[in-house]
Image 1 (tube, rainbow, N blue to C red):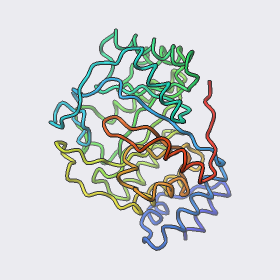
Image 2: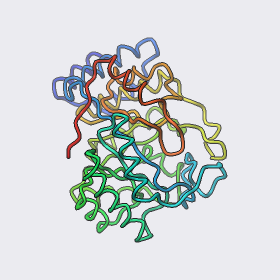
Image 3: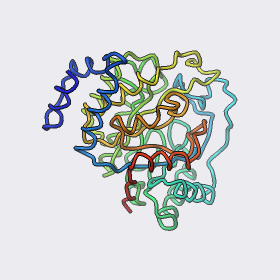
Image 4: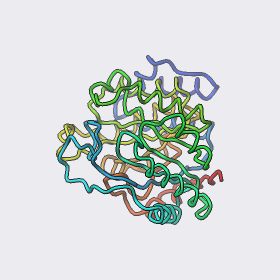
Length: 326
């Protein structure tokens, strides 16, 4: 079954949702074969290059949204560090640090529903201009719900991707957050697309979703024609409603990653937040199981492992880095 479905994709075909559900539910003893076939698909359609990105938590905490996984929500008491928007100089310095860590793209990420403070948005634009001019790294943003006017301004200063996770399967989204809707997500994605910005959108595994809902999320991203997909793994944050969620096993995670590759053979699929805690010693298997992107240098409220360790992993795997599109 695994080889049959892989051959179908390698020949330019598509697997069905029913076939994807069969793949994501294969037993542990068949997981290495599933990863090997996913990696053949990755090699066939994407080559060996790995896209390395980094982010900065540019404005932290006090978010009015109630996403159940998030340390930065004002609805929960997590002890997260809170601060207003970093200065332009601090954002430029963070971009330089990201490039030194091996990143080819850098994203400014802010907590909150969107950018209601005009001076915050203008300062972000100024930082993006300077980063593009001074650092030589591709610039991206993740600024919450986006207006069409804001999207146009981001495009004008050179933003190449806008990040807006759908977080989970549409059928599961109401169980994750109710202060904004799935339609709000869609309006932001549409605004970015209409401005000519490519969209980066994925989600988090481990939010009490079923394996079938992981497949549903992948097919939803396919429907939206998303070609850059970060897959995060839940870090259970004390004080959030999901602090006691059961962790996924590494093999369960790797099966989900592989099935995303079967469904989205040509996409840039990135292993991102939570990989160190959840995959532990099996992190390299994500990149040998269909992934062709990685986030380095820490995440929004949790640290990552040393960039030097990730560089060594990529070198040992014989995987070159992509070049920034600047």
